[in-house]
Image 1 (cartoon, chains in turn yellow, red):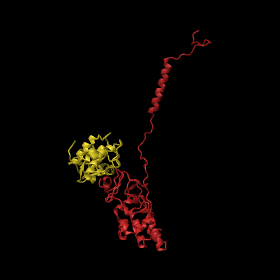
Image 2 (tube, rainbow over the protein chains, first blue to last red; image 1 turned 90 degrees about the horizontal axis):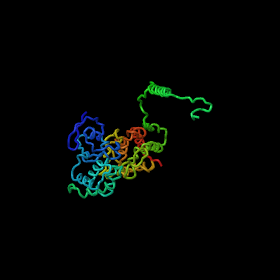
Image 3 (spheres, chains in turn green, brown; image 1 turned 60 degrees about the vertical axis):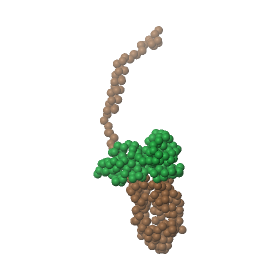
Image 4 (cartoon, one colour; image 1 turned 90 degrees about the vertical axis):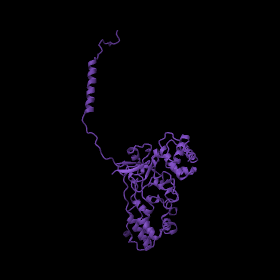
Length: 156
Length: 228
């Protein structure tokens, strides 16, 4: 049964089985490879995308559950929070190997949308599900603080 | 005297190239024969499961307590049997005494670190629904249910004796339930029912939800006595 789903504002028709993880639909069927496969068990956060604005682990989200929800991947992340995160990530040179960073950025964008000025504790709590094997956590935290102060001020 | 001659004057035996060549040739033919010798090829076969599927554990029926003549003692015995479900990791993991759930049969701290939030559904920035959805998802092994959430802190069961849990259940101030609501929660609630269908290699709660509900019903009807 084909599924029609909205990814980054564009409708895609895919013929994957309903129990296919959304991650593989995004990467293999739609061809957007910015979202990464890390653990496949919702343990690392590398596959984080937004479904109707909420961050979800796409490796643990069945295609059949998407329905008419709006899926946003790192390629389609936009808005003042996304711009601020992008600028701060560049300014602080956050990525090291970079593999986890699309998931980190998607969680950070959702954090700033819900909490415009997060404390260290808020950041730790919101980002605890996103692991970084390069341990760039300090730079991630600094970049989120920086981005929080620059939301709506345009790209650096 | 030439050094290659023996003292007794016998000539040293000399080897030509032909014997060496023939020896190498024979060895190569032998090697080819050994390699090419027909043998049974490995066949595909089912590998044994890495983790044995959990075996269901039975729960005693209400009828099996009929031999206890004293009503109070029967009531306590019924609740003690129901306690095998109540104190099972499938139930305790979401009735923590802290603001974070535990997981697995070992009841280790939840990974990633989660907080209950104001509504028991996680913090606004990291909800339970980030990973848990309407049903168990075999592809990732993540369990799910439409009502997936933590029990309120007043309903914490971890670290408490069965006697303490019993008194807590009967206290509407902490259970937020009348006895009828308590029975419905135990016997019919969909999230409670997940404990018998946890998916993956998780051990299900003993018996069935129907049997568990019958035990709670019988316990309430016998005066809802608590173990000491």
